Amino acid sequence: MAKTVAVIGAGVSGLISLKCCVDEGLEPTCFERTEDIGGLWRFKESVEDGRASIYKSVITNTSKEMSCFSDFPMPEDFPNFLHNSKLLEYFRIFAKKFDLLRYIQFQVFVLTGQSQPCEQ
Ligand SMILES: Cc1cc2nc3c(=O)[nH]c(=O)nc-3n(C[C@H](O)[C@H](O)[C@H](O)COP(=O)(O)OP(=O)(O)OC[C@H]3O[C@@H](n4cnc5c(N)ncnc54)[C@H](O)[C@@H]3O)c2cc1C
Image 1 (tube, protein in one colour):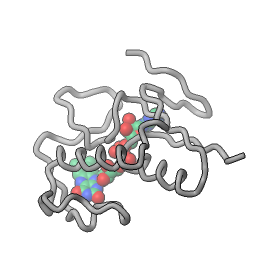
Image 2: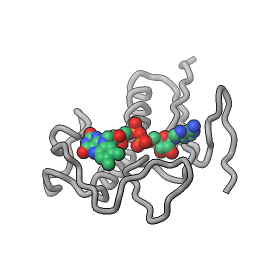
Image 3: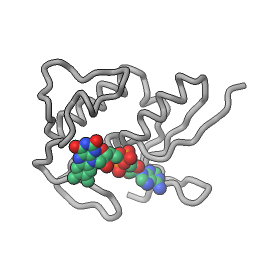
Image 4: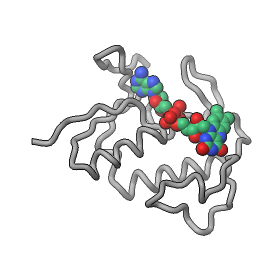
């Protein structure tokens, strides 16, 4: 039986952790406190308590070649330095390609050693 792994957060770190777990034959479950992937790269107009976010005009300061997952280059038509919406789009393409959403439980906030549904 495969080992189970908990991944906390579905930002870029969580997404690649999920893929690596699956590649290694592990059974991951990701707990994400918000309703979507992307972490701080998912810009929202309104500030949410306890949630990190970028500002609306942020563009990456690392090139797309340096920022991409090593086995998943960014689309050729993407600019070299990306507006945050493009980076989020890349994460969505990545998650879809490797069918990662099925491992994520949204709106679950991990406390110390346990998880619970978020109050909305
Ligand atoms: C303004 C700015 C610009 C940046 N520009 C670049 C750049 O150009 N290039 C670069 O490589 N890096 C850049 N960074 C660094 C950036 O931190 C990383 O690129 C990346 O977003 C970090 O991803 P992460 O998944 O570790 O964290 P996050 O994106 O913060 O994601 C963490 C996720 O975990 C969830 N979470 C947190 N706690 C819990 C909990 N207890 N239970 C459940 N879910 C939880 C959150 O909701 C979130 O979705 C920048 C950072 C900032 C702030």
